[in-house]
Image (cartoon, rainbow, N blue to C red; front, top):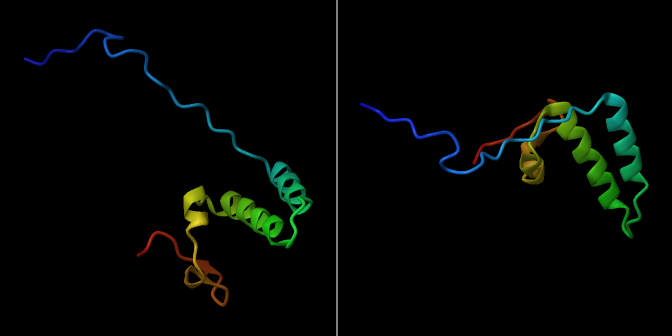
Amino acid sequence: MAQIPPKGMFGKCHGRTTPYIFTEQEICILMQASMELYVPDGLRCKTISTAIGLLWSTGMRPNEVCQLMDDDVDLNNVLITIGTE
């Protein structure tokens, strides 16, 4: 016979916060704002804007965007490959 422990026996359950889905307009605002960041080389603001666009348009996870390498991007066939080793 299985026993079910009483509710709350292991402390309070940590629930997840409700995800927020950004609108297309909000993403455009974020991407534009990132292009206005001060960076000495000008590359970081373009990288951030691109990452925001990738996250929103592809559904990639932040760690997947951070781990992208040149070989993962095929501009000729408009493909991004993720999750392979």
